[in-house]
Image 1 (cartoon, helix red, strand yellow):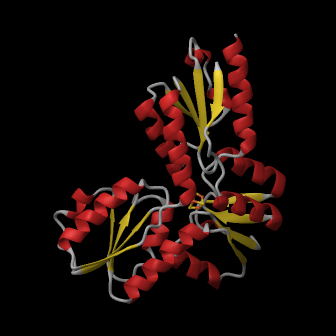
Image 2 (tube, rainbow, N blue to C red):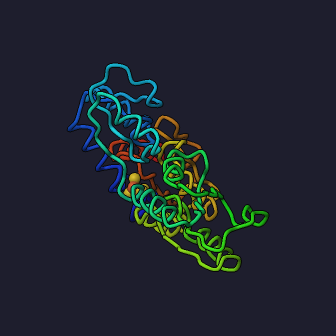
Length: 277
Ligand code: F3S
């Protein structure tokens, strides 16, 4: 069986940057998980004493706080600044961007459409910067019953698909006089998506490695499943099953933007062993 890695996969720039920062800062607490990968979070906890808090209310006597890759809300940041704690910002610059756009556009009187998952921490953070009205939606049909203003700005959660973002933009163009479009979809996600699309077309089994709570990993899995029925999302090599590879010829592998390389290597090794038997 041929085992092939996607041309682009795994850790993105924002995640690499956040992990490097956390390793350098040490002995700190992150507000929410630093990245969406449990294995890497435990490695940082064990090796660098970087612990994960669910929210700022859990802070007790920590001296250093690290803001996670997905960012936090404007209100939480203000609250954090009032406390006697050193703040390190590991928010990915691609996430800071839509936060700034929302702040600026709403200050200029625009209401804002955010294409994204309402409950995702990144979206919660971005939305908190809108001082007018924000509409968080997953598709254009959610806008049909809303009386939209004449001028509107639109941004996207970094991990969303460009095609779907364009559908929302098209809809807005038809109903609003002025539409300010900011393509805030992250390049890294896009490259990983393009690569898995290509690889899943020629593979008869696909393994996607990443956190089940990671939006971009789930997105990769969905793209893969569209082309290759036998697509599996796993967090570690322990989940791999020998029967998945039985009489398969081409195994494609990809990984979400917060999946560390050491996990991917373990997965490859185990697949090699399983396919030999
Ligand atoms: Fe940033 Fe994109 Fe990664 S938004 S955290 S570089 S997936």
